[in-house]
Structures are given as C-alpha cells and as structure tokens.
Amino acid sequence: MTFLGRVLAVTRKELRQISRDKRTLLILLFVPAFFLFVYGYALNFDIRNIALAVEDNDQSVQSRQLVSAFVRSGYFDLIAAVQDEREVVRLLDTGGARAVLVIPARFGARASSGEHVAVQVLINGDNANTATTVMGYVVGIVSAESARYQVQARVGSLAAPLLTLEPRVWYNPELRSALFLVPGLIAYIAMLTAVVSTALSVVREKEAGTMEQIRMAPISPAGFVLGKTVPYFVVSLASAMGVVAVSMALFDLPMRGSWPLLVGSVSLFLIGALAMGLLISTVAESQQVAFQMALLSSFLPTLMLSGFIFPISSMPAFLQGVTRVVPARYFLNVLRGVLLKGVGTEVLWRDLLALAVIAVLLLTLASARLKRQWA
Figure 1: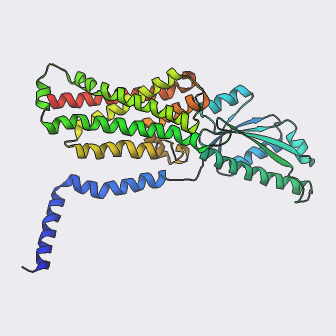
Figure 2: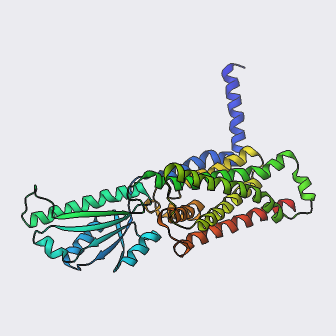
Figure 3: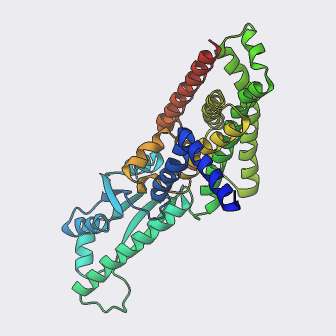
C-alpha cells in the first residue's frame, strides 16, 4: 500500500470513530458555534439602554424637549421621574438608574430668551468605563440642544454655549479604573480558585481508587460533601479576604460599608462556588476533564457575563436571562455596593438572596448526584 493509501485508511478509521462518538462530535460542532453566538453578542463595547431618571424642576415644554432628546438618542431609557434627593440617592444606590438628569427651575424661560443655564447630571461611577461613556453621550446631547437654542436666540456660534453641563460622578469621582476593575478581579479570583479546588477533590479520590473505601465508611453523601467543602472554604475565604486587603493597600480600594456584611457575602459566594466545583467533580471521571469543566463554568461566565467588563443592559434579552444564573453577577453588585457605595442589606438583599438560593441549589444537586453514585 502506498503512503497516500495508508493515510486515507487512517482517515477513514478516524471518521468512523468520530461518527460513533456522538459526544465528541457534538462538542466539535456545537461548542464553537455556541461560543460564537454567546460571546459575539456579549463582547459589545457599545453602551445602550442606559437607565435614566429625571428630576424636572421646571415642567415646561423646553424641559420635556430636553428629556426627549436623551430618549431619542437611542442610548438612554427613561425609567423614572423623581421628585426629591432621597429618590435620587435610592436609585443610584440600588443601581436602578445609571444617570439622573436634574433640570433647574425656569429652565425653559431662560433658555428660550437666550440666557445661560446649567443642567446637572449625576452619574453612577461604580463602573468607570461605563460612566466615561455615559458622560460622553450626555455632553454630546447637551451640546446639540445648546446649539439649537443658540440658533433660535440668534446667538453667534462663537459665543459661550447657552446650555452648560454640571456633571457629578458618584462613588468614583476621579473615574479611577482600579475601583471598577478590582472588585471584578476579587470575584474572578475567588470563583476560579474555589471551583477548581473542589472540582479536583472528588475526582482525585476516584483516580486514587479510594472512593470505594469512602463508600464503606459510616458517612452520608451530605456529610462527605460538607467535609470536602469546609477545608477549601476556610482556605478560599482567607485567600479572598487577603486579596481585598492587598487591593486596599496597593490600589487604595475604599471600604465604605460594613466589614461583617463583606465577610458574610464573600462566604455566601464561596459556598456556591465550592458547591459548583463539587458538582463538577461528581460528573467528571478524570482531573483533566474536571479542570476543563471548572474553567468553562467559572472563567468565561465570570469574565464575560457578570457585568465585570461588559454591561449586562447592553446585551440581548436572551443573554440577560442567562446572566441570572451567574453567581458573580450578584456578587459584583454586593462588592461594589459595600466597598464603593457603603450601602447595607436594605439595598443588597435581593443579590444576597440570589447568592443563597444558588448556593443551596448547587449543594443539593452535588449531594443528590453523589448519593446516586453511592447507591
């Protein structure tokens, strides 16, 4: 047989094996297309659907026209009309609004008569990249409206703008990238280390051949899961709090909230991450497979689908739904709320509840799968 004939024979053999191995064929064909679909939409630097609240102290035709200019731009969604400062604080603290437009009294009369008037915009700065982009959008819209009033008032284009902007960035006035990136890195590092460590733990027992001995021991699957989780929880919690301390020392990360709340939320997040690793370890048959599954389930979602880098509001509705099962999404809200905003459980309880539900669900699934394997 010639060299080419031998190559063709091996090729036919491999094609037959691939066709028989449906799982491998599915991975080869489906996973790349799935990743392209998911991250092709997630990797989007365009900031849209920005939640905008308006405090209109003028209630004139001109003030409504200014609000309409923001909505017509396609970047802002009007979500609320607020009446006082307490509502403004609540919306910015909870993340319900990314920006608040404050229109002063007599805005319409002064702008129409050619007087100079200032409008204020309050921007949530917990995400420095998004805040910078929002600032650019606001400057452009206000400049366009100012030019329109200058034309109406027949004021020369070289004159000072009739509408001036007074921006105020909350929580991160200097728009330091470190205050935006460090909380995300804390979530990313904690998630990755916790999932990988426990994902390898049970599989290591399988490869070492000690699982049969453990099954014969007087311990339930739930007890075995807890016994596997506690040591890694202690190590992961110490590691996560060490990262927080180092971030405060090196990057001037502020602590404006409660230390007990921070430790409690980190603990809740880690329990869910460790449970995910245990669930993976009950599925995988080798440490190599467990490591790959751990990376896929922790690295990519935490980096891409948690709001760490890419705003969730700019993603398609389908992906926004997917992000609801990503624990890091809720943990990031808690971290930024405690560290940067100084808010408490009265604001963060929904995110904390979501973390608790995810942790309980994953622990239950891991115990159920292990119990089935022991039966």
